Length: 287
Ligand SMILES: Nc1ncnc2c1ncn2[C@@H]1O[C@H](COP(=O)(O)OS(=O)(=O)O)[C@@H](OP(=O)(O)O)[C@H]1O
Image (tube, protein in one colour):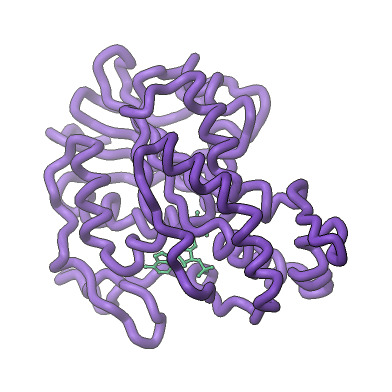
């Protein structure tokens, strides 16, 4: 591995339900670490930090799982060594909702920085469902899965697509081990409307130079999302893959309304816990 003033090893393992990035160093007492759980909010959209950072700062992106293979054999043993001034990132979507993840990560590296990408939990649930539907077209409709008893309006909070969006519940678990100051919450909505703005926050949080800026993005009309501009040494601009930014099925507005009501108290709790208002109540419609 080449020596460099700044070198980021990024461990990526997208699953699309929630995600995490881990930044760790070789001599553990000195090197920087960050771990980033997210909740199907678009963690992959943070990749420009790796891609562009890599161009200026030698980034390598091997794919290593971290916590998903039990026991956590402390993956740092298999993660690449990181030198002082380097950052190793790890992204495993299920971290945020895995009960034992905070304790394990804390025992491995308590100075790990966490980045959580969150979006409106109603949209997140539909996105999650859309992803499953693409792999298993025979599953029941969203409207059927969302309820324990539709007549009574009883939401099925045990369905993972719904449960993952109860962010306050999951965050409580993380706060037993990590202070809020060690966690950055990225808005999945702003990641789409203002990718450079969210990226600036991420870079500041990680103590990086703002390498990824507005000049790196453009809005791709065909994709319907921001994409990275064509790099000088490449022929094609880079959008995220086909599995990111799928068209969602049309969901019964009444079901959307009930889900919004269901999530509201949890969202409010989440805003209070994080000190950030994500304004999910103000959105008029979901995709
Ligand atoms: N730039 C850009 N391009 C495409 N998609 C974008 C982008 N920024 C955010 N998003 C949103 O990311 C959503 C998918 O995120 P995931 O959580 O599945 O990503 S990951 O699996 O954790 O990497 C994906 O959700 P869906 O629209 O439901 O597919 C997008 O809304």
